[in-house]
Structure formats: C-alpha cells, structure tokens
Image (cartoon, rainbow, N blue to C red; front, side, top):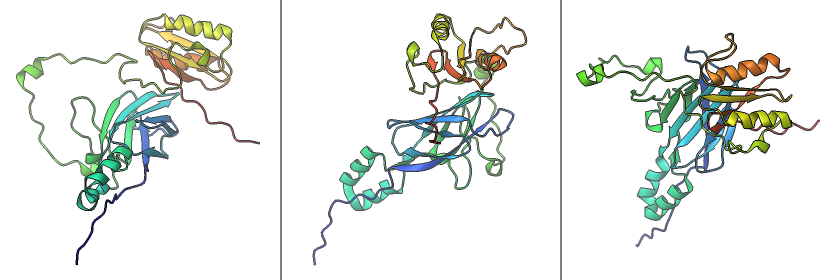
Length: 276
C-alpha cells in the first residue's frame, strides 16, 4: 500500500487576543488609557486593562498608550513561531510553512504585557510564562519577571570602563519614543479636530518651536501649546507633555488630550457615538 501526502497547512486564526496593562512608575495600575497597536496590518485600538484582538504577524507590534493624566507609555512586542509552524514542518512541508509565514498565522505575540508611563519597553513572546504578565525589558536591562517568578541571582559587577562612564539622564518629553498613531501628518493643520481658525493658527505657530514640545486640545476647542523646559507659569510642570494637558484642563470645560508631541501626531480618533 502506498501512502500519499498532499500539501497541508496547520494554522491558527489570523488574529489572537492580547491584554495590555498600563502602570505608573510607582506601580499604580491605570485603567482605560487609549492604546494603539500597530504592525504591518491595519492598526488596532482599545483601552488598557481590557482585551484587544491583534493580527498575527512575523513583524514587531508597536504599542502606544496615552493617558490624559500620566502621558504616554510605549512598547514593542516581538512575535515568535507557534505550534502551527512546527506542525507544518512535520506534516505540511515547505509550502505550508511559507503560506503561514506570509499570512502571519504562524506567529504569536505575548498575550499579556504591562506598559509603564514614561518608559519604552520591549516584550518578547519567548519570555512569556502561562498565567503571568510579561513585564518586558528596557534599554540594556535583563527581562523583568513577575514577583513569583524572580529567582535569587547574584548581580555581576560592571567592568571598570562601564562603572566610570557617566549615565545619560533622559530629559522630560524624551523618556519614551512617542509613536505616531497615523491619524495625520504633523504639518496637516486641517486635520486637527475641534479648533477654529485662531486655534489652527496657534498650532502653526507651535510647529515653529523647538523640541521638547506638546500640543493638547479639548472637544470644546480649548488648546494648550507648550515647548521647552521652563514654563512661564511656575505652577505648571516643567515637562511640556504634562504642562500642555494641565494648562488645557485648567480652562477647558471638558477633558483635554494630547494631539501632538515633538514631531509626532499621537491623537487617537474617538469611536463613532452610538445612535440614540
């Protein structure tokens, strides 16, 4: 008896659920931050603390979460080949592997990640343990694990050359890479919602200022444009990102949100209101 083997593809669904948490640097959970998740497929939006569905891909997933009170938290999730890829190697041959790679279905991102406001972190699927959040890594850091996973290890001493090197201190509005949401180009003045002609002219003027800078708006047309690290009002924060939101909220009847930071539009378009 001869057995015939045809081409087969053992696949997962084209998307999978992902939970994104946001925390302050003091360890306080922040729910409801507006998050945008972007890879080589259309962007996905959602709220922190809730599940979102992301399209599988071999490409990295950029995550940006914005809070009116706490600013921006960013991260990058790295996908890894899942069991479907191994199954295709055993049963489907090279054709099945190629199909799943091109469609992205052979890959899975970390399914539970924690972003920290004011930080940019990297989350690798290979670091994920079932039932535990992936805390990710920052620049030149080892992977962070949940408290129950941390083993007792000795920290090696840094080489003399590294101990002598001065540490770079990040400046306000530069602690995280502010990722453009794709809402509009930074110089597309007509794309800004809520503002009248005077407000749009204020935005044009803001575009001529140097970084660090931030621009906040509210649904009632209130705006605040900030730049530099020395506020004219000493009661306002020195960080222009915080200053723009605080100053806008002082005079607005509705909550203000960041529209742009430095050279990126970080605005997330609201979902269409439900019909009455």
